[in-house]
Image (cartoon, rainbow, N blue to C red; front, side):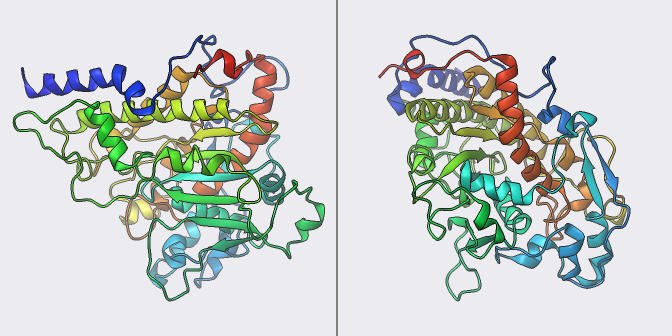
Length: 451
């Protein structure tokens, strides 16, 4: 048998065996009618802004953009009053190269204008989001630095400043670890404190509004390798005995962040939404033991995402309470080659997303991986596990990458800030409207999982 056929059989066998083997999961006693998720438009009633509607807009230049002549000007240009997090501030804001300050001002001179359906979205949403993060519940961000999830956390710390405080304090003289948990807390002197209806047990110094945990693969490496092996696989001739190469990664188990942290009660936590993004570290440098290259990554990613979505749906049903939580998968956004050429840096936003046929790293594969994540959500069909396709606005901004690489996005360019704005609307306005409009079927735990 060929090496390729052997791997395909192994991966296929895993798909039917390892769920029960690895998770001790029982089969659902019944399956609700298929539900494709709230990604597109729904006719009838007063229509709300779907992810597709929001992403169908374009970048428009501001009438009077702030001219950046010194590093601190980037705050006003970006619509910030400051940033709560002090982690690698010049790198995030791309304001430490004097010769590039004209470029830095230019990339913040554009606003994302969604389609006309989205006219009920608040332009000034920051205070509303702070109140929601207390009253409805906080956001738990899970992903890697290459998935830009850590940047999302930093961006939120700027968007909500001065109403939030950030930990840890990176100005302290201690060792730096990219796996440190990061948190945003309500600032006790914020004027919003007087208008917030605090949940019983909420503690301003202990209950985070937003948290970030680095997790490159969604599972720890032992779990990933066990799933890859299906519990029975042994390396054949010419196959590596170790799945992982020498590239460093940071990974934690769903038993830590999903089973435990996400559902932890007040005052330790008050999360309402788990926002997940991955794919950036799914490369042959990290997964060096895959004999058939990206074809194998594609297969393994499908298995991993299917397992994650299953776990998320299962935990949501097992923790049913008066507080309905949400799990949202955000698509991964690949980098742009040649982003630091003068033509790209000063060319402004694009009109259409370019096709990716050949690219550095794993970037050409990203649309395929995003499609697998979307399919995993649709196949599980759980109304509180969703795929929010807000990919397009960022792919129109090859001019907005940080100065050190062509993957990460400059904070304040409007790309990541747009994610925060839309997700706030999506969770508080669009999803409740969608569910009411479509009259989704009930999803009781007795009809979904059997212990």
